[in-house]
Amino acid sequence: MTVSRREAICLSGSTLAGLSLGVLTRENLQAQTPAQQPWPDQLVERPLREGFPASLPLNPDGSAPEHPPSAAGPITDPLMWRTPNRQAPEIEFDYQKMKIKVDTRGLAKLTGTMHFPDLQRLPRVSHTFLLQCGAPNPRGIVKWTGVRFGDFADMLGLVPGAHYCRVVASDRHYVDEAVATLRHPQVMLAWLMNDEPIPPKHGAPLRLIVPFRYGNRSIKAITEMVFATPGLPMPPLPA
Image (cartoon, rainbow, N blue to C red; front, side, top):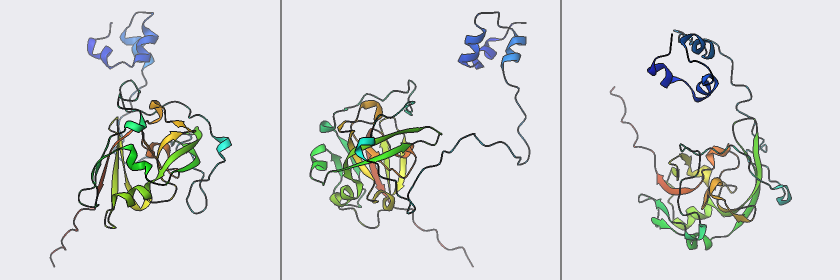
């Protein structure tokens, strides 16, 4: 018996490729497709994902170990762009032409669109860190050059009551980080990677570097930053 159109649509690409040389029937489809187990109606033990999350080597104080610049090299694939083709969206990749929305929502003296000359006024720093994703394979030891996020926040005149910042990438992926975390002296806004402009696939024109977090927290290709405070406290319950 042949497979219905609905069943064929549900097949994975690899299954279709494997069956394309023969006749697609219900019987060989069932042989290729893992059996679906019913969802348990109570909490049960299941094996953990092998090798995940990978250990993140940190100093005793929670900071990232610094590596010598001579250890710097490429970042390995795969790249984690949240786009259908896994490629970086087309934006302005030249860091000298960057235009990044900075919305401080009344929590700083400055708000609007940030350009590269705004960052040029700040002290430039370089650090060499391991970029580690949650999977077992390290991504690479990289030398980053840019400015400390803390110096950037001071330039904005951010008030102490600002609680967190949402950093948005060109593929609309984002992270929310506490301002206290972003003010750690190792956290950077970087535009150079191994002394060259960051390539588009690795986050041009500007990338957040949080070396004591997994690599997906170091947002690529920043397009927007939004600062905010926690919500108002809940009123007390009635007596």
